[in-house]
Image (tube, rainbow, N blue to C red; front, top):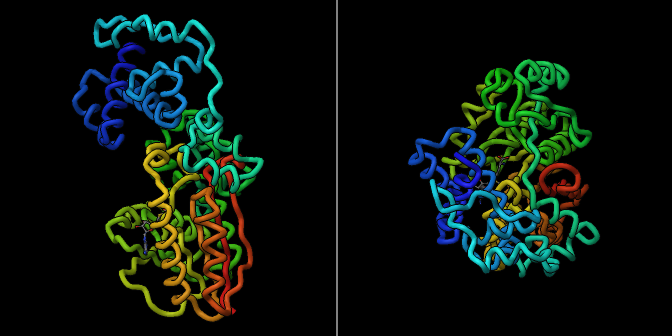
Length: 387
Ligand SMILES: C[S@@+](CC[C@H](N)C(=O)[O-])C[C@H]1O[C@@H](n2cnc3c(N)ncnc32)[C@H](O)[C@@H]1O
């Protein structure tokens, strides 16, 4: 496919997204129907679509409309160059109209700050308050794709060993100071899933901040302590904690979300029990609570635009009840870790304050925020202890 033909496909997919279709579903159907599209074409179309969604507000403002065509014109205008090859022939977009061509005759006018930062209008005052001096730089960074990190399974191999193994398959990775298990992939990240190191369970794909949070929680509890991972989902934190030597039991309100845990654990060479209805007194409970996901909007940019004040209210209620449930499962002197991948105080520090106000005998030992400026997703971790 030519670059213009890839853009035509992206325009169609963005129109479907604007009409309410989830991006992944639209991309999957397109890839299935477009037998002429090779793997490089599929990757390129996906990259264009995701970049346009990350920058949906500024792209629409610069492109003069909300549809996919206007969004791509807006992205092109931000780059300072009119799109090439839009002739209307051989599956390319129609030529620019006079009005569209005029957009490229003058430099773009300055946009309001929240539009330029591609932040939902209602959320900007909160994020500006919660992130303080880092608000602009954080949101600006989140207008681009996220770096790819892997977690070294240190039970099986050292980071240096992984770097050498991956180099044989032309994948380059370098350490990151935020987490000793983390390597940043600097070349050929898309090859990782097919690499022998991945297939042999020597590495997992996992964001830097998730790894830092697992390491922090592990350090806050006795070495090898059993852990109840109360919101285990696909098992990212369960696997990271198991690889740090903990005996992990996983639970999720939706057991089907845990279906990947068994094969991932088998690949990593660890055991993780799955509990439908956990009970008892746990010395360590970890709650990676459902949240806005605002710290990972680079990876899941649709969520940025579908998030709403009503959903935030729903989430904070769920987060409070998860904290209360986990507190009831924690033994005397036990430790409870509460984590989110949210940038919002309302889902983080405010939830801990509300918990402490209603749970006597509990103390907060530490709270840590990790931001995209640190290199990975945004994350929050509070370590609580029952007295
Ligand atoms: C942020 S995700 C977990 C991600 C996972 N820990 C990982 O590292 O891959 C949050 C999970 O919480 C689960 N969840 C939502 N409400 C819950 C509840 N009331 N009790 C337990 N789990 C819940 C969701 O099904 C979802 O899988």
